[in-house]
Length: 296
Image (cartoon, rainbow, N blue to C red; front, side, top):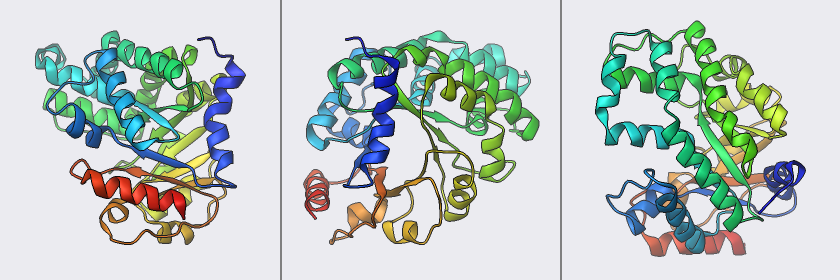
């Protein structure tokens, strides 16, 4: 199915705008769905397996945004064949990351997934979730077994390689990008965001809205002052989001407490309901919570 660039770009942007007037629910359900439908299977090894997992999750949960997490495909490929890491031991960390990201196999599978999901769900935005350069470097360090020496210069250099890795998605159904900056880093989240110019420029070229995933209120406030379309806080409840003053669209609320507490909290206005379903969540409770939330 052919989709014009403008139609694709409108997908994620449309979901963000829709949360002005109604509740938009975006759930990361990969770990949960894998436990239910594909326990122990490598659902990142081929396009068909991953698309089938998403199809089953969508039929059950109906997320209004579908994620494609690039890092998961690369991590799974290395777990399946650890020998890939051997030639990179002892090299500079940024070089290791560049070489690992040059492995086109995992990226090609993820691109195939994005294409297939665009055909299956033409009315649902597909968002590419990409780890920030610092998170990629931490992964590279774990691959080689070397101590991570990650500074601002290495993050700056690695951002170029991250941008190169996401370039193939420009011709797919992807209609937005979410940059995940959670975790410890050599600088605050807003400073790390500024180092991702190559990624942000590419998103601009493709007409993609940019969301940033952060882990705490301070990071949300700092990143929200940057030119971003959304700030996503999967670890914060709706009450914490209400206290934030951010000009960008805020997403969150579906934190661990949301899925475990007996009552369903009424969200504030103009909040994108976003979060991860815990892998060990009980299916009956998940369905009940989503139904209660959507019917409030």
